Image 1 (cartoon, rainbow, N blue to C red):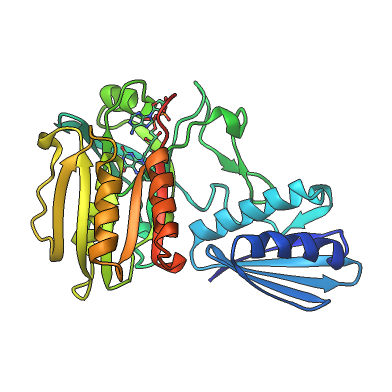
Image 2 (image 1 turned 180 degrees about the vertical axis):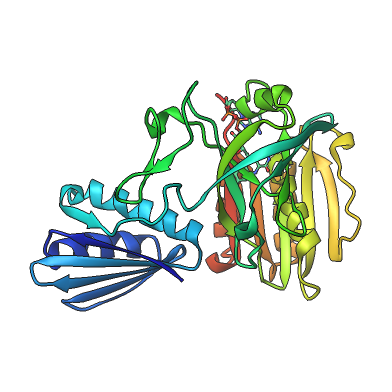
Length: 334
Ligand SMILES: Cc1cc2nc3c(=O)[nH]c(=O)nc-3n(C[C@H](O)[C@H](O)[C@H](O)COP(=O)(O)OP(=O)(O)OC[C@H]3O[C@@H](n4cnc5c(N)ncnc54)[C@H](O)[C@@H]3O)c2cc1C
């Protein structure tokens, strides 16, 4: 595990209580006494200890990328709780955010009516770990801005302010064997900033991203996967990389049959392609599958309203909450 420390000039009782509440609201395990609190969060372990009139926080994460995210998350929490001024973080040894990769575009081509594929060359070793997240965020800064760096506290310093950066999440569609390249499939849509970028980008252009992040490879043995075109990359990646013991069904909605991607080895998965222009089709397929395969673990990702409808359906069906995830991958402009 990678580690970071912070000392807060605040009494433990004042720090523990709000952090415990937030962690428990998020469903994370918390152990605490008057002098020590341990939060077991998905990004890593947070150990807060009373040291005289101060409080020490130790942040442990399985990877450098997760450590950076965990630290940024708690820096934001301390800030919101009014402790930010009294914090001393241990000095970072790096000058670049631990989850940031600067890479080069090696190609970008339209592969079907509604998809472009960009290949990036870079140091993607962290993405090859078995427990790595399947996603990342592109970093599009304001005109002329340099890439983010680390400040003296080891927190990301965003040139011209973080709100001026566009950081859309994407999926690693394929990772090269030596983790020195990755392919990203980009849905082309009107008004999309990444769509515009994909039309003008050339081999050799530099781009930065933060990752790996987000959902990891599922380990449940029976999986039902549902997604629209934005989730096509993650669903096909899961199917292609799934362990031999895992089996399931996938329903993928695309705007054009020409967007269907051939999978050379779908293993124990059955893939069904449906028409994305029919707005209720994906949720209807989920409803049918809950009747015929109620024991499956479910992953659903699509436009926000569809994800909301899917979540409601799963709740109404009393599907165990640990056995499903319904994610909003994009929001339709109203
Ligand atoms: C975990 C995760 C993984 C994802 N992986 C992928 C991926 O691998 N490939 C991929 O293409 N997308 C993926 N997405 C979706 C992608 O992040 C969003 O579509 C994002 O908004 C695209 O950014 P943009 O710059 O193109 O559009 P923006 O500049 O953010 O939005 C501009 C306008 O386009 C609309 N818009 C945004 N997305 C879409 C869309 N898909 N279709 C129609 N209108 C849209 C918005 O409502 C807005 O009005 C993923 C999302 C998540 C949460």
